[in-house]
Image 1 (cartoon, one colour):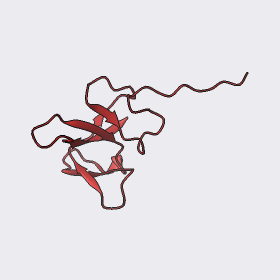
Image 2 (tube, helix red, strand yellow):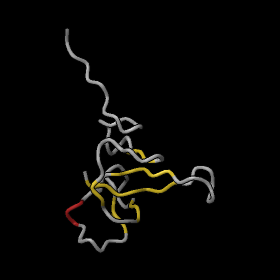
Image 3 (cartoon, helix red, strand yellow):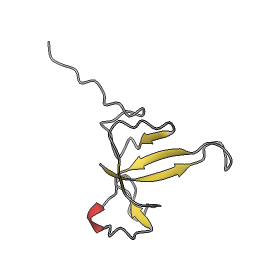
Length: 87
């Protein structure tokens, strides 16, 4: 899935970086030379810097997670939720 990264420093500028992946609001409008991308979960005008990447559903890098509003069918640890089955 195409996504753009939001980089957070929850412990301050010298602490570890947390990367939150967001779906772009209009990926077709990207020509590969964009400085900012509007994100699907944001209000109009909200955008994040950086390019688009193809990001897997199940993230494997430490410190990365999907935005729960952009990718609600993936939990914070990147593992799809278990679907209940009828008895």
